[in-house]
Image (tube, rainbow, N blue to C red; front, side, top):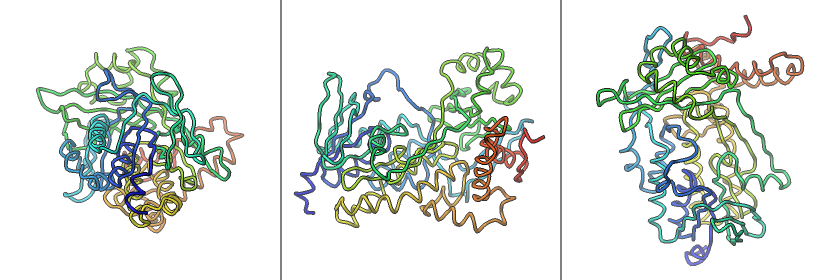
Length: 443
């Protein structure tokens, strides 16, 4: 495919979030004509940002993708290195657990600022056009047509050679592919929800040590805090929805935090805690798997649209960014031949993205600090049974527990208890240093 042919190719990227804008940069560098359709307004001019605001942990995989579009240094300069986890026990004792060697760290990054930087980067390409406030109504990959609805409320058909679905966990592009024969799809909501709170700066500086991911593990509850450039921390509270629903008043909230997260109360502030807790309801977390990631040579899914995962250890964005990088590497390999590249992307990437979905509850050092393929990390995990009691949980145990759950769900009075067990194992390891298959409901 020569350069003049490439220039005539039109690509429609659905979704102007992190993965969509990064993908647009990669495609623009190949001289495709790229149109990005984003349902929301431009976050750079919006009065208030909507959607998720969880801080992101940028690791090696994500940085490699940013490096390929010459954006790594700019983004890294705006991040805060986190060299270890800081575990906060109920007694107030703090224990640091390094991620790896002294030179290894992950970066705390603002989702909003990263998205703005990627939007600025993509708009520098003359062959890219952003369409904000444009919602996808229909996707017809066989015909090379999408239908979008803009601010004028008039549906508009757009022709294109390639449709790239980067429109998140509730992807409209994927919903159309689900109607195709042999397209597999599954989703699972976990019992936990999340809520964000803020630890403000103290005396012009950080209220806690800034170069750590702070973690408060508590049975079925957990809170984490990531540092921000403005000296604050973004805290995220994870716990079952049924527990959120018990906290109905400000007094309930304060009593709960004094009981389970006592050292965080003076950091957040009682008044702010009592107010901020009720600003927004707890949000759900979903895990999505599908196969394949493509349809012929006309459509491909990436990021959360292909493999939404739960956010506990920060590989979601990194996996989505690596999707873009892998696709770009395959475009090099197959000389921009979409009929070759798209099937190979599915074949190569599905095992890895399904594996990171299974690994996402755990922070595995080889996944975080290298580009070892995710499914290879799972295979290594199987070979390392001897370290189970040091905190690496055997993947087969999770499969066995899932099978047991399916067998007894009809007779169990509390079927969701079994879904919570892996969470309890994580918490028990943080608290005791070893793995226990006991749960609070087994006593």
